[in-house]
Structures are given as structure tokens and as C-alpha cells.
Amino acid sequence: MEIPDSTVDDKARQYAEEETLAALVSQYAGTLYRVAFSVLRNPSDAEDAVQEAFVRVLRHRDTLGEVRDQRVWLIRIVWNIVLDRKRRAKTRPETDDVSELARVLPSGGMSAEQIAVAAQHHAHVLACVDKLPAKEREVLMLSAFQELNSVEIASVLRISESSVRSRLFRARNLIAGLLDHTRSLR
Amino acid sequence: MNTPDRNSLSNHSASGNDLGAAEATLRLIASLPAPKGLEDRIQAGVLAAPRRARILAWHAAHAPASGWMRAAAAASIVFVVAGGGWGVYSLVQQPPTARVIVLPPHGAAQGGFSSAGAMRTPQTLNGPVVAHPATPQSTDSKVPGKVPAPTAPKPLRPRPPAPGNKATAQPAAPNTK
Image 1 (cartoon, chains in turn green, cyan):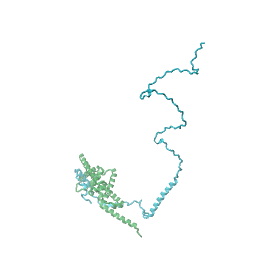
Image 2: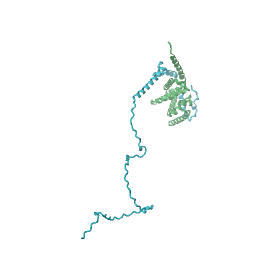
Image 3: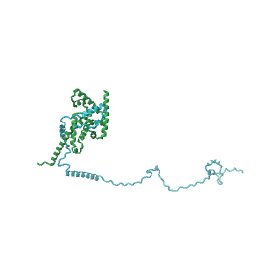
Image 4: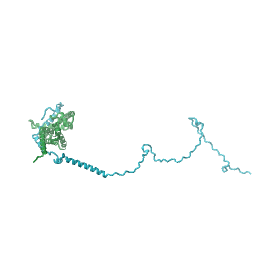
């Protein structure tokens, strides 16, 4: 029985695609997960977002060779996915950030009470971050990632580097004012 | 995979403890480790996802790259377009040209005054010319700037009777004989 050439080519192409995808997943899944978690703050939602990002990569695998920086490209994909999910999730009741953070944050030898206090503090800070305008909030959250410099943040958000710097300056002033205001109210 | 101190934005001076606490929280969230087995689950989920749309999947024998199918599709498109055009052309008939006398545009309609409906009557006869007697003008009126004084009306006198008009003659004197 003769095997047609097209079948062989398809199988070889599929095998190469799977190999490329496996390499991308093993290399960037952790980074994409952390980006997704910083916005969604839910482990299962973040994992779903990463999986959706790689499914999109698989659909656009023909253009994969044209991508210059795959890491920034993947972060941009997952960033758009999580922002879209965050917008849609606004209609749902918000999750309890404190208990979720207490479960996720590294304990580091702290007692349960210390962990609870730290989780409450982080939840308060994140609540203030959520009050920022969207443009400033996005830049501030991406600037927390050590892997991303200002040029790469600008590439993810599709803005100029000077805009990144000005937005970050405004975001820092705003978040400092918000935290100071809430502390004076206590 | 982390490359420390790569982010130059983090080197900006913090304005206070609040800002430092906020950045510390964000960094802590951003540096959370990924759960174990994430790569395997992601890879399995991606490979289980549908690869391509079934609706657009072509059989190999009917692939769009094959020449005969492309030529047949082009020929059918040309046939449909040409047939439709011919059908429209044959159905729509040219109407006969209307015999219309085109009047020249009215002069008044181009921006001047209108005639207000007045009709022009041609002058067919020369009417009688009335010769007015020349009225003598007083010497005062010839002086420029001097208005002639109004003349008083002359008193009426009885006109003398005409010689042959008996009806208008004075009454005859009584016969003294």
C-alpha cells in the first residue's frame, strides 16, 4: 500500500508544530501564568487564560516565524485575554481577595496570624491599585515584572516608551495619595 | 527565567513608605511561582483543542489549489455575471423619444424684473396729434429766480350778441306807435 506524500507532509508538519508548541509552553508558561494571575488573582482563571493564549498561538502558527520577540508577543496575547476576562468578570461578584492571597502567598515561616495580617495588607494595596485609572494601573502592574523593561512594556501595551514613563509617574503619585488617604481615615 | 534588575523602571526613587509597600505587593504578586505541572496541563489542553475549523476543511482532491476547480469557479462567476447583465439589458427597453418643443427660456426668469402679467399691445395706428396753442409767458417768468405773481381772475362781462342770432338778442323795445 502506498502512502501519499501529502499525508507524510501533514504528519511531519503536525509533529514539528507540536514540538515548537511544547518548547514555547515549557519556556514561557510560568511567565504567562504570573502575568495572568497579577490581573485575575485566581489560579484556575490564570491557568485557563494561559491555555487560551497557547490555543491562539496554535491557530496563528503560520505567522509564528514572523514574530521577532516571542516572549513579548506571548505576554501581549495573554495580557489581552486577561483584560477581556477581567472586564467580563465585573458583572460577577468579586472573590474574597484576602483569603485567596493568604492561600497563595508564600508563608516563609510566618505564623497563621502573621500570614493573615500580611494578606490583609496586600489585599488593601491591591484594592487601591484597582481604583487607579486603567492606563496607569496597567503600566504599574506590568512594571512590577522584572522580566519586562520599559521598551517591552511599551510593546505589550502598544504605546511609546515615553508614555510608559509618564503613566508610571502618574500611577505612583496616585497610588501614594490613595494609600496615604486610606491610612489617615483609619 | 527571571532576570533581576532588568526593569529600569523599578529604580525610581520611592516617595514614601506607602509607595514602597504598594510596589512590594505588586512585585510579590508578580513573582509568585507557577503551580506544579502547569506546563503539562497546558500542553495537554492545547493539543486537545480543535485544530482547525471543520467547515472550511477541504478534501485533498477538491483542494482550492487544484487548477480545474479554480477555473470552474471563475467560469461560473463570469457566466452568472454576464447572464445577469444580459437579462437586465434585454428586459429594459428604450422608451421612444418624446416630441417635445423646447421653449426658449423667458427673459424675465433670468433675474430681471417680471412683467407682472401685463400683456404688450402692439401699436397699430398713429393717433391724432393735438396741437396745443402756445401760451404767452409773462416777462416776469423769464426772469430767473422770480416767481410770477398770481394774476387775478378777470371779471366776466356779458358777451355782445351775435348779429344774426335773434334768439340771443335783447328783448325788443315796446312799440311806441
